[in-house]
Amino acid sequence: MNKLNALLLVAVFATGIAVVTVQNQSRLHFIALDKAQKQQIKLDQDYARLKLEQARLANHKLIKVAAEKQNLQPPTSRNTVMVERRK
Image (tube, rainbow, N blue to C red; front, side, top):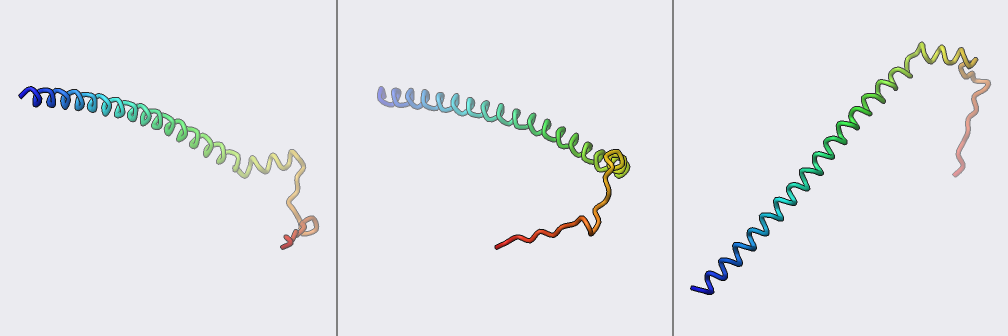
C-alpha cells in the first residue's frame, strides 16, 4: 500500500505541473492573439486611410489642376519611343 500511495503522490504532482504548464501556455497564446488582433485593427485602419488617400489623389480634377500647374501635356506619337528587350 505504501508503494501505491507514493506512486499516486508522484502522479498527482506530475498532473499538477502539467496543468500549470498548459495554463501558462494558454495564457501566452491568448496574449499573442490579443497583440495580433490589435495589429490587425491598426493595419485595417491604415489600409482604409491609404484607400481614401488613393481615391483623393486619383480625382480627375486634382490631376488636371496639377498637370496645368506643372505645364504638362499628354504624350503624342512624336514623343513616344518603343524600347525592345534583347534576349
